[in-house]
Every structure is written in C-alpha cells, then in structure tokens.
Image 1 (cartoon, one colour):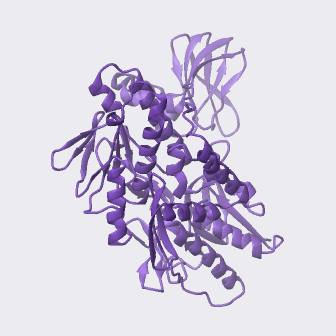
Image 2 (tube, one colour):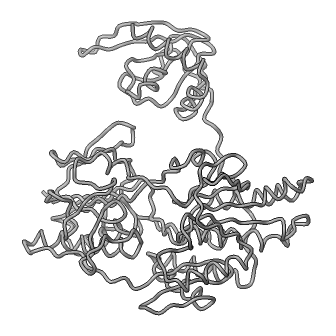
Image 3 (cartoon, rainbow, N blue to C red):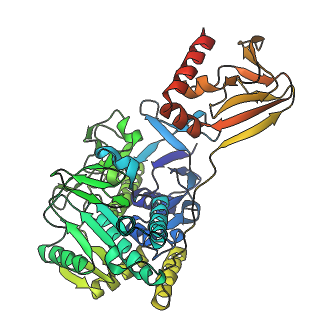
Length: 527
C-alpha cells in the first residue's frame, strides 16, 4: 500500500513542500495530498496591487491543480487531527465528517485573521488576507469615489474620501500606497473631486514604519509617503473602530469612510486543537522542523516556530522563509524515508522589498540598500519572477505593462449575491430532508402539510407530528449544530420558504424574540 503524505495548507510553505515531494517520490509507492480551502495559492505580497487596481485578481491566484499536477488537491475544510490514530478529520462534500489516514503529516496552515483584537474592527474594517479581501477593498475605494462625486455636502464628501490603514508593516505600507495612488490617479475622471478632498492615513504603534528594515530606508519611506499626501501617524494605538472611523488610545479620533486593518492574527483552528507543544498558539518544532515529541508530524510556515540555525533565532513569518522551510521539510521527509539523518533548518535571507506607492519602493538586497524608482523596478522584477507559474508571470507582466500606456481600470464588479431566502415546492410523498442529513436550511410552511417521522435502528418509522401552514421546521439541528434527528416528508403538495443556514443564524442571533420562540419550540419538540 502506498504511503500517504498529507500537507495542510496551500501557501508558500505547503506548495513548495508538495512540489518537491511530488517531483522526487515514486507515485506508485507514495501519495501526496494537500488540503486547502481555496483551490488556488495566493501570492500575498501582491494583494495590495490588486486592491489598488494595478493587477487583476487572477494574476495573484495560481490554481493548485495546475501548479501541482502530481498532487491530490482537496478543498474540504479540515476539522482536526487525531494524532493517536494518525487521521485527518475533515468536512466532506455532503457536510458530513470524514477521515483520511496519513503516514507523514506536514502542518502548513498559516494563521487566521483576527480583527477582534480591537473593539469594532471586525464590524467596520476590511482585512487584506485573501484575493476576495483585495477585490472587496478595491470595490470599496471605487464606491467611495462614486459617492463623493455626487455628494453635495463638503464634509461628507471628505469623509467618503478618507481612508485609514491600521498597521505600518509591509502590508500596511503597501496598502496605503496603492489606495493613495488609486484614489489620486482616478480623480481626473471625476468632476467634483478635488485633490484636497482625498486623505489617506496610516496608523502605526511604533516610532517608525517598516521596523524590519534599516533606519535610512524607514525615514525615506516616511518622507516619500508624506510627500505623496499620506498622513503618517506614529506611536499611536487604535482603541476601537466605529462606523465613523477609529478612536486612538490617547482619545484622538480619525474619521474616515474606509478602514483597512493589516494587523491582528490568530492561530488556525486546526493548530489550536492539536495536543502538541505550542508557544502563543504556534507549534514548537525540533531543529529539523518536526513538531516537538512527534516523529511523523512536521510544521512549517507562519503556524510554526522554526529556529534558524544560522543565527539561533525564530524564523520571521515571511514568504521567502516559508518557501525555504517547505523545501527543506520535504527533503528531510525524503531523508527519513531513506533512513538518513535529517538536517536542521538553516537559511540566509537574500533581502527585503516593499513598494510604497508612486512608482517608488525600498529594498535591502545582499546588504545593499536601495530606494526610489530603481527599488520599485527591482521590486516588480523580483516578485514577477517569484510568481509560481509562467501563466501568472505573463498575466502580471501584461497588467503592469498596460499601465504604462493606459490609466488604472475604474470599473469594479460587485460581488454581492442574493441572500438565500427562497421558496420551494414539494409534491405529496416527497422527502424534504432525511434523518441524519447535515443541517443546511430552515423551513416555514406556506401551503400544505408535512409529516415529521423518526426511524429506529430497524428502519421502522414513528410519526411524531403533522405540521401545517404557519408552522416551521429544521431549526433544532441548526441551533444545536447536529445532523437532522427525523425525516420530514410532504403529506400533501406543499410550498415552503427556505432560509439558508447563514441567513438563519444572522436573523436568529440579532432578533432575541425570534430566538426565544425557536428555542421554546425546540424544547417542546424534544419533550
């Protein structure tokens, strides 16, 4: 039977590990499986370019199936790891829980966004973690410009055109620069928007932006961003976010119609529930990247604390370190398979790059510090070649080349979908849902009658109730997050209103009287 290597996560670390393993292992004796909820790998360093309209979204999303043709790619949600039984628990296509065994496990699931670090941030701020986040942020910027164009009140127009970025690291600086470029370069197409109406604020808790780079480049970054019209607010912490803007801990308020939060992370749910050694939610590893006290579980990327033998310090959560860890973890797994000793992680970073807007960037490469247009050109060239496939490189290069001759695209496609509240028709005798089915919908009867039936182990049915117009069903499994505990069959031709799980949850949580009615009905039916 072929040995199975399972990788959790399709980021830099997981994809590199999968590519190396698939390229060196015999498919007849080994199977490589990668779980990732999205069917593509996201090139995170360029998300700000998508938000700013410099790149189309598909340029930074490489489909895993095309990127890893020899790897079994799966998009099911991983629920947990049973270390003793060596099983991955996941939610299957039919919403039921299923398992998959492994011989070697590589945990590379990164970290999750946690906007709950500050009150109100989850309600009012845009994150920048996925391609969807970048697309939504770009749409928000364009929507604010459209609103400002037709707004008669000057104060409200300025509020529409005020953008607040929380966090002065790489993501925050790049996001602020791109938003500023998009808003200001687009202004010439709007009749009623003046340059002084637009404001971009970047708020950082430290005394300088980009603490990872040298002093001179940090100062250059601040100077150039301020010249471009960005308000740099340093040594300031956000206390809360509101519908009008952010409130700082010193009591100051910065108002703006758009808030972008680039700080706040949390360990992934899978890592949180693993009964292994952790420090602040990250997996502790041995020198060769195996999880402490585990022989067949490896951890790489942002979810792990991997010590770099070069300087004895934990590896920073950057793409170049994650990619190198993925490669070396794969080689160590191969060494283990061959009975050879594994090697500790050791890597000397090549350098660091950050675009700051206005065709300018800062860079430290092999000890050389570069800033301005040359650094920006170098940034684009290096990141273009780091994209994981030639198709993505060509797409990104075409988008950038397009901007030399044409302005940024001002169109934005609204991704809003119709809320799932619909009607359904069932004929007499049709099964609406079966006992044991996963809970996905809530039903309200408009016409006709249904029977609620329960089956015992032998398959014999017991009729529990008959429901008619105005009655509802399906709430018990949704509220308890359990499978259906009975069959519901149409006794006559029926028409029902169907409410999806997400809509049902929002309404029941926000309307206390409705939730009380549902809970009361659930208790009565349980009795």
